[in-house]
Image 1 (cartoon, rainbow over the protein chains, first blue to last red):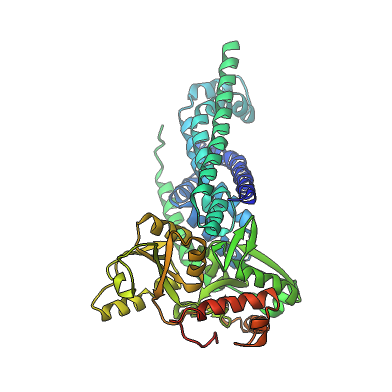
Image 2: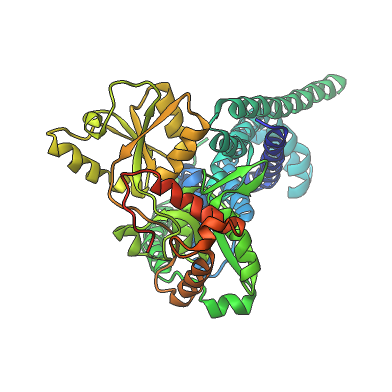
Length: 215
Length: 296
């Protein structure tokens, strides 16, 4: 394995991190939005969200990706591999995020919400000040769990030509006929990425504890 | 807290379900409308999209992050030859032929072996090589010394490949000696198949003689080339079915790249590409068990 090979695995790491971050940053608010639509029980839309989430949770990411990549151009929507990969990641992760957010919302004490209403808070303010901080804390472990799964599911994006850590390693093995060394490098790269995410979660949790202690 | 749904929601969800079922039925209709760009359309828009693989050494592989190999050298020549821009997408085997038949890529410049089944949805250029299927075994495996010893042994082969599709030919060869084809293990690509062979999970791997010669040359301590397990086999490039002008364009390109059999340019070591095609040829000829006529 040459220095160029190691460099190409690191290039793969940049792709893995970038796509995961984009997937997380877009999928997180969409998941929250979907959960709120269901929580508020908006007529018809709430049911549509439920069906959408069920279908996406039942669809393997790789199948969804191949479908988007090959079917969308047929209905006149040109899509490149990166956009297809991001779209599939966001659709997939938002469905799972929706359920994590919804679990927190279902457990949210209704009396607090009514108390906020009775002091005349508007809906947006009630959500920002009362609901969001509390459901965020409850959802965080579940969300971080989903994020770490998202990072590790990125190798399937290779089917449309996205070269992530694993695909870069596969390519090196195909050229040298020695697949083990590149795979070792690949495994060593995933661990710090996920650890960084978990460290961020711990930091947020500690900060929350500190603010609560101060209050 | 679960909310009990009023009856009307049940009706809505039934309608939704109906809609989803209809949508599923509609998808194949869209698929039927797949449209591959013609040569005129390619010229008008100014670019052509080529799809190649990334793990099929020596045809296409990636070295130090750069596409390398036989087909990639031809892609470079194509850039000089074509009056339009060449865009290249490097993707795994899984999606490559589907991408061509749906018009996502204009051509698969990969060693796709011509088969009857593939001809139903794709048109093939003239062959880029002559690649009979051979088997490779572990170095020093004394239980296999000729094709008839393969009876009942486990074979590794790429899923969805022509190599897999033509295993019945080997079965026929084995049946003549009252043997039988053993268990077949399918892999998404060949590097895994070679690795499993080295680990002893399979007894032999079937691939084209060109791929296997490269493997054995690179890993002489681990693998040993066997004999032919198929009749003639021709890899070629694939375009969408009915895309005749584009096919003609590529056949002209291949004719220009390929010197006539035994022509001086084969011996003269002319351009990199000419020598490349000649090398592929000589790798076939030096192996006595393959016929003498070149690709046609």
